[in-house]
Length: 202
Image (cartoon, rainbow, N blue to C red):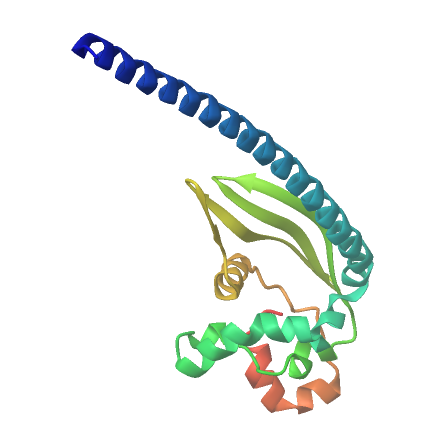
């Protein structure tokens, strides 16, 4: 066999192998692309179902928050939310005017004669930050609060923790509680008042 024939065969075999590889790769890539598209569509459908279900439960919860949000004080979920703040209390990381009582049921808020209403919820997006806007009402006192949830940092998301949300609420607070007359029973409990009433908002 001449060198020309040998080179011709080698090049032919090489080209055939290359063509087969490209055809197989293109076919596999197309299959993979179709699978990814299908998976993304399914994920979005599942997400929509979960979000709809969550929204439905939130809708059921909102009447309670609008009627008297203090019903949350005795829940395990609210206690769990407070845990990092209680740890910061113990470690001394919070200043005295930021500290909270360990037991929400001991808060003066839970002993006043009028309900705390949380209403007028709005989801807002400003400066790459998703937040909730809501209005708090306690007898004659009323104020709107913005609570940040997540910040978009490039391709990643940074969620705000309980301490950051608490600090944000404290920074916004404009107290005007002169008309909130506490009952004699509450005023007699000076330890509760000192622990909660002087330092903590809600």
